[in-house]
Image 1 (cartoon, rainbow, N blue to C red):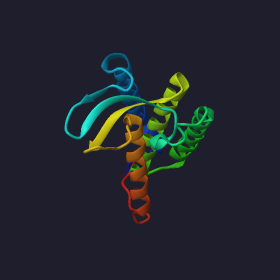
Image 2 (cartoon, helix red, strand yellow):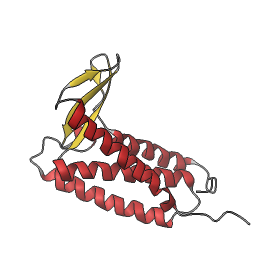
Image 3 (tube, rainbow, N blue to C red):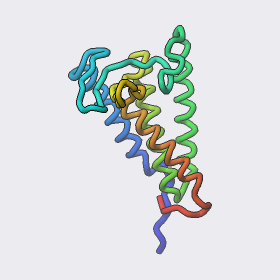
Image 4 (cartoon, rainbow, N blue to C red):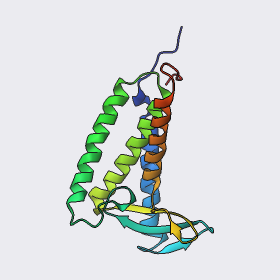
Length: 164
């Protein structure tokens, strides 16, 4: 008897894991690790920092007077609803399902920050020489990996996928 295909909602455990890791690491940064805007050098290319991002990716719109908080919360909640809908309707596409689960976990993690604090807490700082990549967090990493996986999944030939 063939294995019954599950819809992508079966991957919500991954969403929960991303959300848990994101919130625990942010709490560690805020409560136990470093003060706001402090830097802890770890290697010649990586620091732990504590910065607040009121904008979108790469601090886009961070200098705006405050409209962006509600806007980004709304966009993330709508996107989360669309992702849950897609996860419910998707069966048998493991890469697509995992990608959606990662993006959903990251989106919810950053929405929690915006609701609780009015900004997103970022703490991962990679750099080369004096050039620093914008600081990010676990949620941002999950969103980025999920987006790359969606692109990868979209480039594959139709019908080529593993069971979810």
